[in-house]
Length: 413
Ligand code: HGY
Ligand code: MN
Ligand code: MN
Image 1 (cartoon, rainbow, N blue to C red):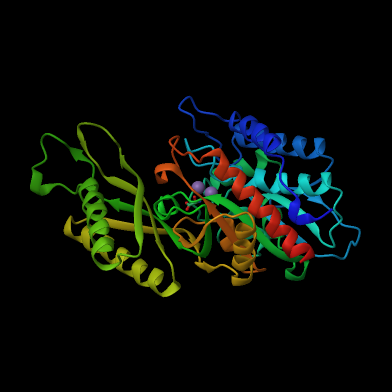
Image 2 (spheres, rainbow, N blue to C red):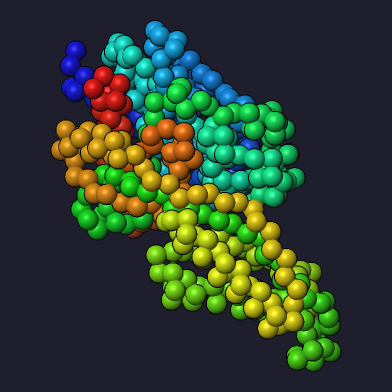
């Protein structure tokens, strides 16, 4: 049979997506599947059953990455990895990550059903903790050998959450640290993902060819003041941690918009302690994250923001505790794979446009051990990390179809 005529089974793909979207579903059309939550463990078990029903072998590595496998006859052959992640952010959308894992599974099933024998192994992978409930890109960083014991001491979700989550999933820290794959084993990594922005729709394009992925650093900042009576303490005598935290939050946004217009900064949570109406807050804990497309800018931005935090703490006579809880380097996507994706999209009469990614993805971990590439499919209104997240079904079919033909092109030319 002529592989170029092969098409995915769009009906099966949709049935699977609808079933997957029910696991951890929230009333407003999103999903809530934080890493190692019951819903996340449930969705991984569901993925494993689906692979078994499809007659595919299955593997769970020591970092908990779940993979459906379509092995070829030669045990020494390299593996082409395709996939994404089944974990979600808190109260997230049902397409982020999920559409990539199901597209990968659909490709393996389509090739298997067609009785096509490839000279390489194919693996549809669901990476552990992409979203950073615990660390962020944890499963792919483990596979790339980029995870260090220090990373597991100071991380976004906190060490207790890591240890209790690992034990719920039957995993260990040692296992995380020994999941590295050898480069020669991995022919490449391909990922389909929603754009999570609105550039594709604005450009009237079907497929985004990802050129690079942003680097992201995360810090926990704690402004330290003094608890006092909120009524009897004169305003100018207060050591109010909330003032320093709020002043920094506003100043950080101004700093980035004025001096780093190609970057972003976010303070996603701010907690004041003790947290009572009538006590001046003595502690203010902030979760700070910032992103840039190259290492130098990321370093400059990091220095600028931490200096700003120190300055605002001094302004309000506060102490400041700074803890790094994550750093992911920016990565360039393989030009060879961008070309493969472009040719595959063209063969399907789909319009492509090159896009840099401001979202982090597992492909940026994988790029350090093999050629990695991604395609984006359109997000309506650019909405993501929210139940408002939505992609038209034809665009989902387009993404999986381009992935299928990219895989066939890499496997058999
Ligand atoms: O946060 C991100 O950029 C990705 O969605 N994990
Ligand atoms: Mn994602
Ligand atoms: Mn995400």
